[in-house]
Amino acid sequence: METAQITRISKFLSLHLRHQPQALGLELEEGGWVKVEELLRGCAGQGLPITRAQLEQVVADNDKQRFAFDASGTRIRAQQGHSVEVDLLLVPAVPPAVLYHGTVAAALPAIRQQGLQKMQRHHVHLSPDEATAQRVGQRRGQPVILTVDAAAMRQQGCVFYESGNGVWLTEQVPAQYLREL
Image 1 (cartoon, one colour):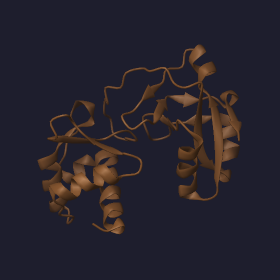
Image 2 (image 1 turned 30 degrees about the vertical axis):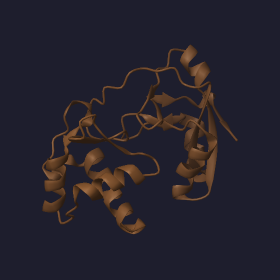
Image 3 (image 1 turned 45 degrees about the horizontal axis):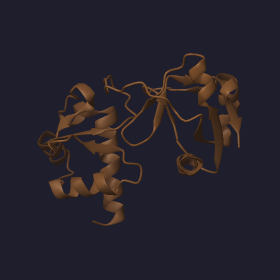
Image 4 (image 1 turned 180 degrees about the vertical axis):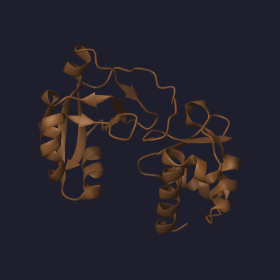
């Protein structure tokens, strides 16, 4: 498949596995899982017929590993970023001492005042390294990279989770734990 087609399918899957599963006739199971056959049927019903092989390529080639198959290969889910109610069965984990967040300059005034908020999602997303945060931030313009003092947050009782693709998740990041690079 061409890059443009992979991107189109990936965006379609992100929309429906994270935000609008009902539009494809899907109901997220515990952990955010849906049956692959139901997903493929739903995609075809919405005018985007894809094959199992194409789905496997999108999952394998996604630079951020947004999607994952279960061990049996019969179910798929978005790793994180949901706005619909779902329990991803995440287990608290000890983060690296420093995490990163990519954003744009226009967001800085609100971030300086309120910290990082999860907004419509279940968690704030944090990157394990500066390069990943850079890629995330540049989606909306010139990126600004923030460091997160995860060690200090954890000492204060904040809980972190690591998703299956290495993204770190937490409820919020108060402004005092943030610094601009």
